[in-house]
Length: 311
Image 1 (tube, rainbow, N blue to C red):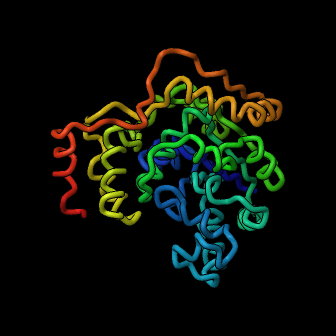
Image 2: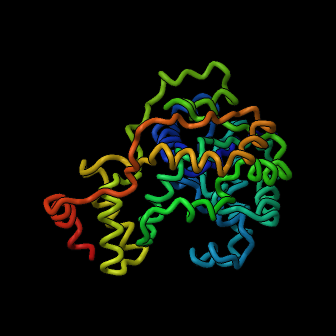
Image 3: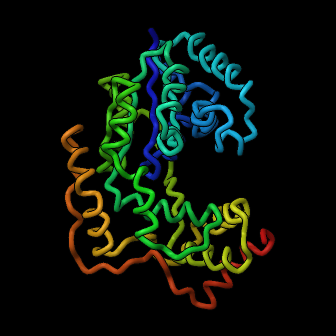
């Protein structure tokens, strides 16, 4: 039976960098015995998550995927991996953890991949380190609200790692969590395939952080509120202004980090008992939140000039 390394996220935990690494090094990885399928990976294998969802579900409908195409997808995916001369393959999609929430969807995914030995890898960081990135994404999706911790805490299911483990372990027996503490921890996945894996032999992607700066977030929020932007327009503007160099990076204050840490204390204690991964309490120091930024007139005009054609 062939082995499939399946990276499922979590979101805001290095998925983009990991996928760019696969794209840059697919030929070298293949030459060494690890196939990187051209499809459905695309860039983040979104299709894999969508097709695992029950036909007719909201996400599948949004992507105009008809139920009749599910069987075609299964055949194409299996054929691409099974016809490969390699005994190992890898797919990566953070959407698998962010979109697949129900037992039925996981049953679909398990059935889809039933002809392979699946080793699931999950990247994880403390919640207080990922939530700023979620706020940036929410603004890209057309939301126009200021940052509120309570709003993110309401979406607890995406942040309760013990619950994610419990759900996925019912359908996949080999779950491997990778605690990201350094920039290169994401490449520990490949040690499953090759215990002598040497990252220095591969091309490392340049910085792929897609979070907007505090100034860019505030500008996007103001613009979305003023013009009632669609998610598509907000996303276009975010891509146009990101990396402008204006304003500090997004960041929580020390008290905000501690509030999030306390909120997930019980969940993380359960997670530690299951996986052995422990999140230390954030350090208390004098740090101001940079989730918002007062734009000067010059900064506002600089950013606005870059996006006038998109409104």
